[in-house]
Length: 122
Image (cartoon, rainbow, N blue to C red; front, side):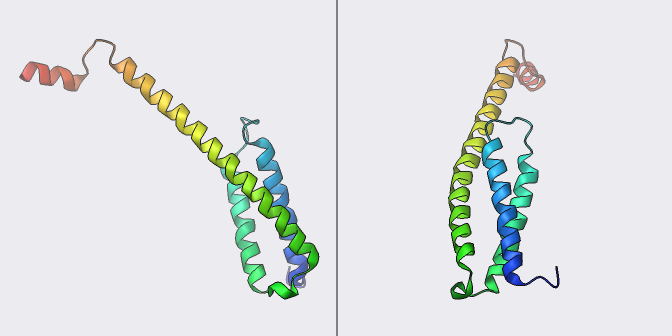
């Protein structure tokens, strides 16, 4: 990549980021086998690389196509944020349900070892 100019590198990173966001937005909530962690790692790498590259390019020197692509990326990031929040909330709810079910199973009328010990000591 040493011979590539910054403009070309920005174009490539924007393309990768767009593809990652599109795939993640389509998969969240629909594909149970989707690897959210791997996608998040790729997304983070692209955002980091993009931030480094755009620091090297003053806004007035950024190509018009990059400005348009950044608007699309911003919209996809906004959608992605909402979908990730919904996904995390769903995971939290399932975790709460499992925790509550485990507590109910433990409270089925038998004593836990700790409860038995306290009952015997009292």
